[in-house]
Image (tube, rainbow, N blue to C red):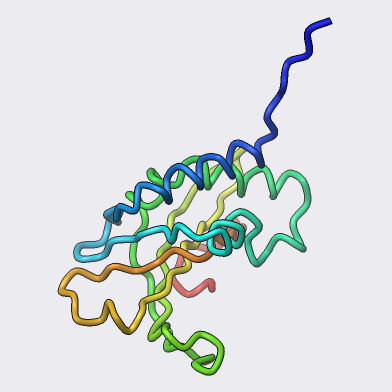
Length: 154
């Protein structure tokens, strides 16, 4: 009997993260002057794959998250700068100067979501005229039908 190896969506997302981060390239966002790069470290890729929201996600939400990873180039190209926050944990993240947030609105199965690309700006990148920021998390927020997408959901 021949058994085919069926990849799970999680395995596909992990392999895609390995591939795309190995390119060590920047991806333009929909906002002028902003580019996002993925760190090619196992810790960074693992964090992206698992997400800070993972412990509260059900299987359906996890599968949407893996879908966001598989569509990452497209998400980044549609991402619009929302806002920034200073690093409030400089004793933990010593090389991070600011956090920047980008938003992409998506409709999946007739439900509206704001996908937030959470990025870090390093002190070493602050002198660039084009802001190059490092993706560290992808978070999802369901948008209520009466609520419009706003940039301050994170």
